[in-house]
Image 1 (tube, rainbow, N blue to C red):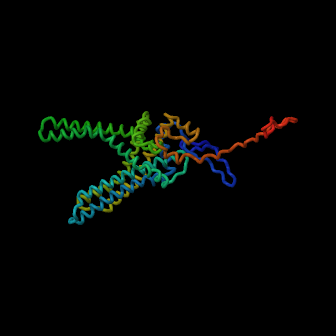
Image 2 (cartoon, one colour; image 1 turned 90 degrees about the vertical axis):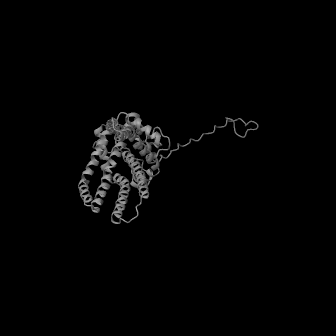
Length: 374
């Protein structure tokens, strides 16, 4: 048998027992659990993604479809508003529509991310999974995942707001009364913007493993955030490289949209809509999101497994049996529903018959005894 590479699925080498009348069923195979370097994590990310491309791209298209509906709604509103000036303005109703749709997109993003994590965990450990099964599991966790996503972005943005808003206020005061307030406000805004970006990246990385913890270990929102901070310790730089790679891939999608953006800008200068260019741009954005979005989620999930191998010897736990994968379980982990195999039938040992002692020859039973004395 040819040796298998680290990036290829490895089988247990054990076949399930053959029952009478049934074909042999091999044990599931998965990817090798061991500490991985950064290059191995990235290579395995693309290897897993390539092996199940339509599975992960199909899951990611949920968010892309929700975003596409939002953008189409806004485009159609602008179209009718442009061609029918007498149409009554929607005013607050339009913004209610936008905010409601953003909430739907956020929920779709949470379901898509949770479904990707669940599907990756199943594929990573060698279990069969489909888009419908992944979405069904993630649908039960959408509110929890949405809470985690909101927490992640709020925790990442508040340092910039704390430093940026006072600078904007001082800049406004300086514009009104003059003096040094203007310079001080501008300097504080620059410092707040640069420092806020650095703090945003650090805080977002600290909370980046919360979704895998929530899906795989069944943790609520706050314990998932705390769990992420523990697991991320020691691997922040590697996760940062994954995010840089993701930004680079999204930049490629943006470059593909650049010619259409030029067409839209020229049409805007002429007072035209360029509906075809807008639709093509939305289509490229949809396809680009479906293709690129699974990569960071898969990478983060592999980092999650890698950190658990390093910190908790998850590989040894799996060697002893994959029934217990989550360590600090608060609720029954959803992950266990796809991991635990059917229990092996219990083989009862035959009970040996106890021989009764032979009666003593010549001895009569005593009074009140029905059985012979031994």
